[in-house]
Amino acid sequence: MNLDEATVELLRRLTPQLVATLVRRYGDFARAEDAAQEALVAAVETWPRGGVPEHPAGWLHTVAARRYVDQVRGEVARARRERVVLDTTPRDALVAPPSDAEPPRDDLLELFLLCCHPALPAPAQLALTLRAVGGLTTAEVAAAFLLPEKTTRQRISRAKQRLREAGARFALPTAAEQRPRLAVVRQVLYLMFNEGYSASSGPDLRRAELTRQALRLTRRLHDRLPGDAETAGLLALMLLTEARAAARVGPDGELVPLAEQDRARWDRAAIDEGRRLVEWSLAVAPPGPYRIQAAIAAVHTEAPSAADTDWPQVLALYELLDRLAPNPVATLNRAVAVGMVHGPAAGLALLSEVESGLLAGHHRLHAVRAHLLELAGDRATAALAWRTAADHAGSEPERRHLLRRSATTGDPDHSQRR
Image (cartoon, rainbow, N blue to C red; front, side, top):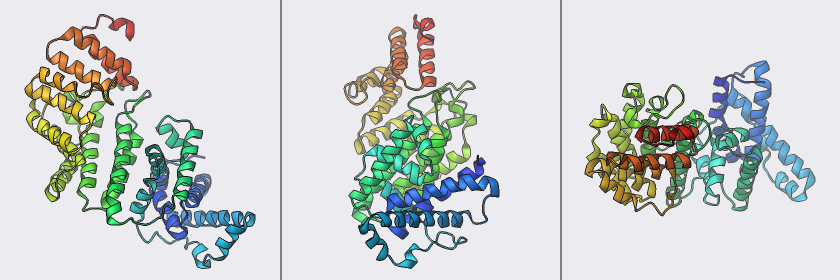
């Protein structure tokens, strides 16, 4: 049976609090997450017939708590050690909450920090966050990253086992521990957003469901930590980037680069909110990497056309970003800004810094080189670089765009490569 989109969104919204409440009540993340998933399955099976209950959160908590207790009781029957645990557990701790009881507190931050525990590798953190906090099923998590469902199920299962072995607790870490854990949470959310905004592979340019999830979760994290400037900066960056999404895709799903986008199609409400967040976050604390990237995105939104972009300001922000959080992607983007301010030869010279690192062979490195060569008037070499970029692109719409750029720049082999 199928649920309508509104009910699916309702379940996704309720899932993190459901998991968090169970973990807080019983203390075992693996069992709590399994029980929550069983309650969601029960909802999918019964709600289409009987309708959404009057108190859906209470309904889910009641079902999940019963499933949890069933799990514990079943395991107790098979193992003496588990029986001792159950016998020493206060009975009132095993009683499900009233069906009309709403969750008394917001446990989202604790759940985020648990899913992004340092004992887990990054892929496991991401999968667990999508499943437990994002409310995606295992099949949806697998589809989002084009992985086999079996692989994803094993990854999630191992992550929960690792949390148990590491003695991970559902509680706020100390202030000293929170800062690096929050950095990981933001990194996971940004990774989720980027994969949705620019799909690394597959037939579509973007996966809107991933960007929506990342935005929704980041907004909730910001609600929980309204004074955290870097989280506000991350939310601003996502809003200012997603505001361009409609203009970034052409009628046939093709990529429309920033310089060619119809800026009248940009989402002005999202831009206004993003810019307010940037201004506030930069005023209350020294700049961080997400706030600087958000400021760069804000500069682009201020320009009425690509030609009117304040490239010296963009370059200054990239230079600051490269000093604060040096990474090859920032250097690559800085090369574009250098090319726009100081000429393409200067931009091409900067590319040498990233040619032998993590970006070696990446299609965006070749695309930036092609762009700068085209600006320099070397159309023949630029055409070859555009074609090389297309050969390395994983996304089919991006590959077609790069081939078109190669053709319009003068690639004689274009007709054989479409």
